[in-house]
Image (cartoon, rainbow, N blue to C red; front, top):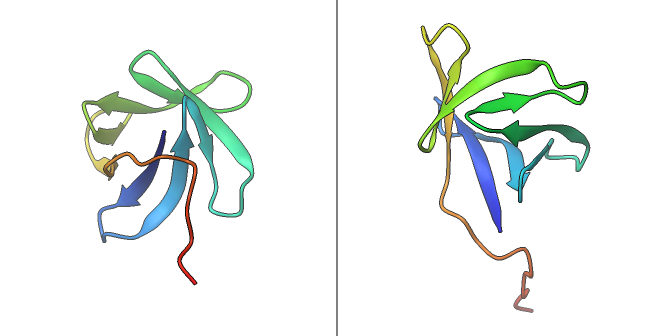
Length: 77
């Protein structure tokens, strides 16, 4: 399952594949642990509440996860 992480302007800026978070260039940048997104060394970066992603202090939403889709893409020519 793959879900896009979309910022407050509606722009896709990361992809969640399983529990791993990737940049749009395909670089692993973090993962989901419980209700948090952590970086590669395990430091908490953002809080996850449902589909919403917030700064750790809860003061500002970072964005939200879009609808999930299969990672097996069939391209139409």
